[in-house]
Image (cartoon, rainbow, N blue to C red; front, side):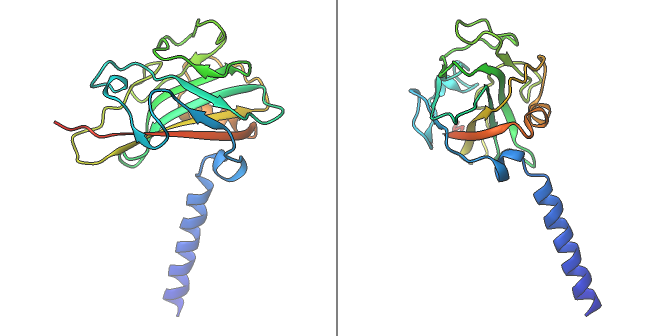
Length: 190
């Protein structure tokens, strides 16, 4: 009986630890923002040109239905299929609340100078470079999922350049009003 109690206690402890590691948006913020792209529809294949095997250009991303009180936006694009931790393909933050989209082919420069996006920063992706890095899955026979998640924030964070995903999530903690998701799929075929 003691062995069963110990095993159940360990399982409960591991479950609580796992739940404490989930991103803040998963438990607190509703997913009410509508996210779309002209390049592909939600949960469909992304065209080759947006992959690192193609032209590696960022697709256009649009959003609507921001909650009242939104002061700034952020974006995280990752591939959860790669290994133990998701591979980060794009981090963008300090996005002005007046913006309704990111244009196709947006520069990968850390400091964004595109009209209407002044102040926006492209953070460090999984290659430790700024800007968009398109799908580049291995030829492993798996369809990889690319999650473009928009965050509505209740505060202008005005963060410095160079942040990675974890640093951005930490900075946004307690400020996320809502999120929205656009998913694209990509599979490398030789």
